[in-house]
Each structure stands twice: as structure tokens, then as C-alpha cells.
Image (cartoon, rainbow, N blue to C red; front, side, top):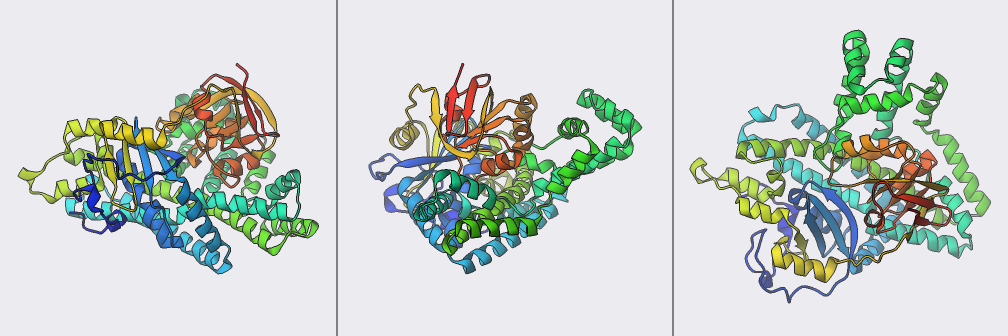
Length: 543
């Protein structure tokens, strides 16, 4: 049995669904509700990731704002989990969350709690990561695994305050209040561009500052700068033998930040990744590098004054100013939590791989175990231990559905049942179109070659292959894509709103960005030439 009660175990199990196992065979699907579902996003790492996240949207979100989702569906295929929410509950949760965020005292309390939870999760993952997991006794190891699992779920309760149901509601409220004040569309965009600028530094920006400082050390040696034009392996070899101080700084930088590649998988950034970034940085002048370091530390007083001037110029109502402030605050909170949970997922992934070693299965197969199954395996005596059958694991790797309906325990649908669920709720007929519309996140027009970054694939490798000036097309951007964003001449995403990661970063980088196209990753492929008209919110296939 699982030592601690999980949020998923709080679910009420209806008689109509049969036995109480987390994976059940349902022969009659007539009881399924008549609902419409919206695609929200895609995550990786197979079935285990859905098992981790499933209850967070139902229970942990409710713990934070008082209301969570009733239904949630994960479609699992090729190691990717596509998340769907029901439209009716998106609206309900959005309305409820918006009403909470209209209260300044709730916002203050929630932000403080989220920061504390982030620090607690970081300290705990650092504690686990300091151990050699292979030598840890099973009972102790399981205890840490279960606690980390639950702490990550709690963290997601705070993350979900800004994702995505409530963020939709915030954006609609901003639009409504601006139209109420008769502010035209162009002026709305200009106001939000300024008012939503972040005035807090994130861990990601701290990493960039630290790398820029290493670049300044490299520029002290002209011969070393010249050497950085060679292949990464050659540069690392030269650093190791001829500039050990720089090599050690780079190694320390990697040890501190490599987990940032792990926002959605087991990846870590290797030394070659940092050399590749440094190669571009050391070409810049020292003045330019110092300027970029300064930009990573926002001038809060100046930005506060600029916002006050805008409020006065357009006579913005207190209600509108508050909700714009909420959008900015939660944009930062979303990024902060995402980066801290990356550390949690990084260590969680290490623990999963250690379980794979102890159970004697592959790192792929362990991603199709539930936490309950891992605990049950080790709870039995040595001669009674039973692995999940290879047949069962292979079925889970095929298209399957993992879902909660009416706040029940999660149900796994496989084979024909999964197809029925997919056809009933998720099937999306795509018309053969060459033009997409989306929301403008940052204006401008660019024509270029598509680089499609696919979730579920090795993100580090995909980013290496991207060329400067490519147009980045992806489901949504994440912190592990920063090098890709810096290479991109424009960004197009399936998902996101005006406070999404893609919107924030594109405004900082000054590149055109269109978000919320829904189908960009399905209509465009690597090498396509497209036009991104972010003045009008249109993406067009040229050839």
C-alpha cells in the first residue's frame, strides 16, 4: 500500500465504475458524461507523468482556490501526454479563480505561500540529490519518493492558479474593462506591453547573468576567444588543458543549472550546450555583455514610475490596474514555479531510473508504472514480488486514455475503449488550410523557415539542430527552450495567452510572436517557409 494518502485517493468512487483499482476495465461506457473538451497542453515521460499530474487539477487546485476540475483527460501516445479539460469546468474554474484574484488580500497571501512552497521543494530536492540513491535502503528510498511525489503535486496547486482556465478569465476581464473605458485595440496592446513587463528576476535570468559573466572572463584571453569558433569538443578539450579555471567555472555552472533542461523529461544540459551559447556571446563587445547583465536586473523604481505614468495618461480604473497587476504577478509566479518544479522533476526522474534498476526493467518501462504499482511491488516479500507484465506495459505505450470523470479515481482506458473515448471527446478533424489565426503577443512581420520543436523528443538535440533566424513553431514554450528562442526570428505556438511564457519572452527579445493558433504544430513541418504577420495575428504557409 502507498504509505501516504494521495490526492487521487480522495476521489469518490462511484458504484458504476466497478472495483476500486487505479487501473480498471470498464465494459460499459454509457455512463460517460456528455461533455466537450479543450486541448490544454502536452507533457512528456509517458504514463507516470499523467499519474503525477492527474489529481493536481482536481484536488490541489481546489486546496488553493477552493475549486478544481471535475473531469480531466490525458491522451497518452508515443511517450507524450496531451491534456484536455472540459469546457464547462474551464469556465467555472476561471470565474471562481478570477473572483479570488480580485481580492488583494488573497493575492498577497497566495504569492507568499507559493514562494515558500518553491523554497521548500528546492531544499528537499537538493537534500535528496545530495545522496547516492543506489545505496539508499529501499524503505528510506520509497519514503523520499512518496514525499517528493506529493510535494510536487502540492506545488502544482499553486501553479494552476495561473494555468490555463484562470489565465483565460484574467485576459477576458482585462479586455472587458479596457473596452468599458473605450480604449481601442492598438492602445490596449501598447498599454499591456508596458504594464506587463516583469520587474522580478527569475532563476532562468540568473543563469543567463552567470553565463554572461563567464563570457567576460573568456574575453580576457584573446586567444581563447578565437578558439571558441571551433567545435564544442575541441573547445572543451582546450579549456580542460589550457584554461582549467574557465573549465571549472563552466562545470560549476552546469552542476548548478543543468536541470533546467528537465522541465518535461529526463534531459539535462551538457557542457557542449553551454559552449554553444558562449560561442555566440563572446563575439559581442564587452560593453554589450555588461549591458545585457544590467538588463537582467530590472530597475523596479523606473518601471513603477512608467506604469504610474500610463495609469495617469489613460485614467485607468483601480479595478483595471489591479487585474493587470495580477496578470503581471502571476506571469512571474508561473515562471518561478515552473523552474522550481523542473528541479523536482529532475530529481524525480533520477529516482524513477533507480527504481528501474532495482526492479530490473528499462528506463522506458518505468515510465508506464503508477506510483501505487511501484509501492506495491516493494511492499511484498522478495519471492512474491510481481512486475507489471510486459503485455500490459506495451498496451499502455499504445494510444490509451487516463481520465478522471466526476471526481472519481483515475481510470485507464486501453485498446477499443481508449478509441471510443478518443472519438467521443478528443478527435479533431483538421481541414487542409494554409492560413492560421492566433493572438498577437508581440508585433512584427517575419518570413522564414519553420523549426518545429516537438514535446516528447530530446529537446536539447532539437535545439542544437535549429538555425539562427528559423521561425520557432511549438505547442508552448518552456524554460528549456531559451536558446531556441534566442535563435528564433519569430515564434508561433498552439497554446498560451498574453501572459504565457512565449508572450513574455518574445516581448523581451523583441521578436514577432503569435500564440494560441491551436493547430500550428499539426499544419506546419520542419523546413516549411511561412510568414508570421504578428501585426494582424496571421500565420501563412508560403511553400
